[in-house]
Amino acid sequence: MCLSSIFYALFYDLRNNRFLTALFIGAIPATAAESSALNQQNLPIYQLNNLPEPQQYQHDNSVPTPSAVHTAAPTQQLLKLEQHILPTVLQQMKKGEWQAAKQALTPLINHIPPSLHGLFLAGQIAEQQQAWQSAVSYYRKMLAIDSSLHRPRLELANALAKSGDIKAAEYQFNLALSQKLPQAVENNVFSRLQQLKDQTTYLNFHFSLVPSSNINQGSSRQSFILDGKEYFLTESSKAKRGLGVQWGINAEKRFGQQYQWFVSGALLHSDFPNKSNDQTVSRLMLGRSFGTQQGHSLDVALGGHHVLYQHKGLYHGGVLRLDYSWRIQPDWRLALSWESQQLHYRPQFDYMRGWQHWATAKLIHLSQGRTSYYWGVQQGFNRAAEKSYAYRTLSWQSGIRHHFDFQQLTLGGHLSYTTTRYLAADPFFRTQRQDKRWNVSADILKRDWSWRGFSPRLSFHYSDNRSNIPIHTNQNKQVRLTFSKEF
Image 1 (spheres, helix red, strand yellow):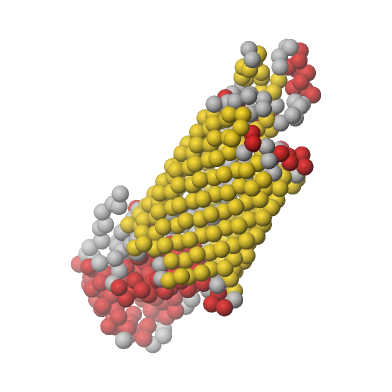
Image 2: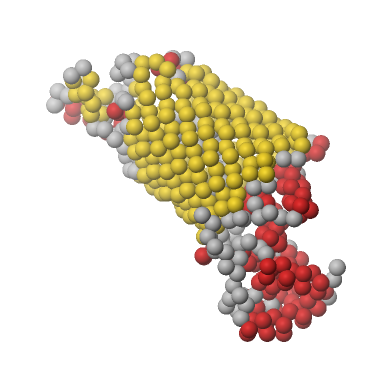
């Protein structure tokens, strides 16, 4: 098919178409200054030790009421401009004169509103010149005018994949599937998604500034009463404000026959004032994918993890993970996972050694190429050596993410409610601990902002943990500015 026939067919289509922190008791004395000051008042003191609680250190794969879609109607002036410029541009493209064609499109691109056809052809020219980021920018501008367009979204996903941003490409292909594509196109998208999963290698780096109202997950209480006596918490056991820095790397490489084997790794480091709460988590996994049939996939992986706390080894052990995905419909997907973690703590904390297991189910729905919803439930089991440190936890989760046309903004929200019940009475308080925790977060992303491939995201987080043992009650308000890039 010649370029002119492609263009006019396009013209018709365009116009119509996880660190949570558990507080636990330890026999750590207060500092000398604190002990002296409190003993002068003849008051009993109590020291609370804060250690990071093991959890799933996974990618944040939460996919987050569609607003009305308005396609900017071309003015008479723009129509005349298109009729004057486009034939020349098409001839230049047929001759491979890409730079001249790009320059000729400038009036259409700079027009307010810009020409959809001008933007599309500019994207096609950028692809021919392998200027993938420029192509991404042009297709995003088209979708900002009308997010219901099929072809630009597919071209955007393809350009993102070629630029190396695999996760973003997969996300855009999945959004396209929610737009009720023709069967042949839908089948091609499924094939492209499978290719991205099976034959790609990715490396993601992110860096975050994290101001927080409670960097040590300290108690919101100043004191508590036990057996008629009032105990005061040391300063190090109370909530402390501070600015933290966090950076992380996630990577995966596929290999072997039909790229069924993969090796993945993750490294996450958090740095806080005075280094009293610094944490480093690392994980390395080897796995295999099983594609039972179209719409079904199963990944099985074995590996290990290691955690540093205050720059000293805290625990390490083996990890087993299973991930199953079933695409029920093009716009509905069910994700199930199981993860078992061995927690081999250093001798100082040998009473916490054991295994921890997580079972997760998540239902994901994508709507009209603009909005993603998810609903999930997670059950956790900690089998610590001492029953007073073992627990069961149940979490209910829900989230939404919506792409707005205005300023190419994407807004997301997440809500979770978690109950945790320990299996035996606390040795100091002589009661069985029970916690209830709310987590709320919101994030904002401007899709057309990036610097050297780094994209910024601003998020807000609030957590409220209530416990029947008052010293374990705490709140945390956190702002997170993250810059990420996929290589």
